[in-house]
Length: 170
Image 1 (cartoon, rainbow, N blue to C red):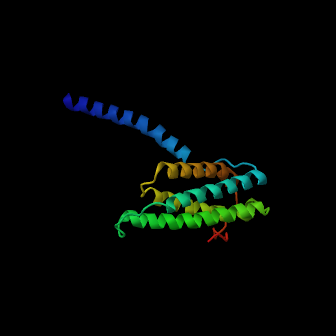
Image 2: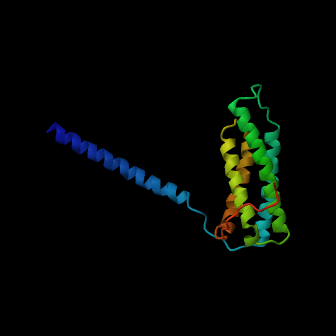
Image 3: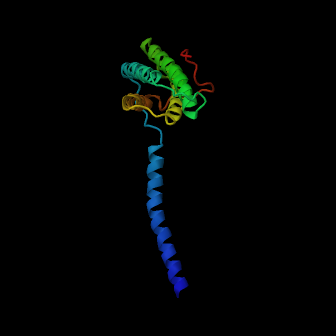
């Protein structure tokens, strides 16, 4: 009898756990889905790209002012150097995107630059997680993230190419 009762409790516990995990997994999967495509608006996308370039420049400037610590070989110092370099390239790539858009290049012409920029942004986020960053730096980084969130739907349906990152920002 005890064995049957324990089995019933185990089944009820697993069922309860699954009833919580499945909706959570669905919510996470929904959040990870690509943004819905927006109709291309050259003026809006160009303005967002300009704001992004300025914001990334502020983040880079803020990070450049950080002290790396006295232990040059430490993991934090290495993460700082990678972050600093990633931000330099990200700033250049975001400026390149803004210039291309200001010059009248459309979605198809700028899609590879945008994809390369997003690859750099992922690297910056990864290396930034390894750092202790001040609140103003984090706030500016969050602002850049908000701009990227606004920009993403414009590139959601852009054609993929085999070689991302043909922008001249490096």
